[in-house]
Image (spheres, rainbow, N blue to C red):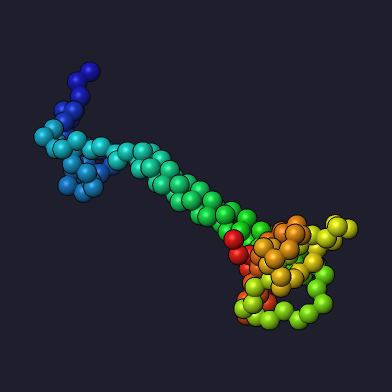
Length: 132
């Protein structure tokens, strides 16, 4: 059986010769229609976004750890014994007593022989900042 229309001619029984209305080239010399490699583009995008998320997560984790450390120091100092009202900006020293209680003092560790825990300064937000 012989074909009515050659293979390189665009013809349909419903629309006839319809090459001029198609959104793509139909002749033999037309450029090749290739689909873009979207999978590799997606994979690169996913890798870049995951790196950014990991970086942000690590940054937040470090901030959280620093915040928790500040909280623990402040809780320790505020729960320590002291019989004076601390002045903002002054330097104080935290010690541990013989009965394992903590106390805050103005006396520096060089001036007496007590177990020194840390040196702190009270800032304007009433937060104890450790001084190394």
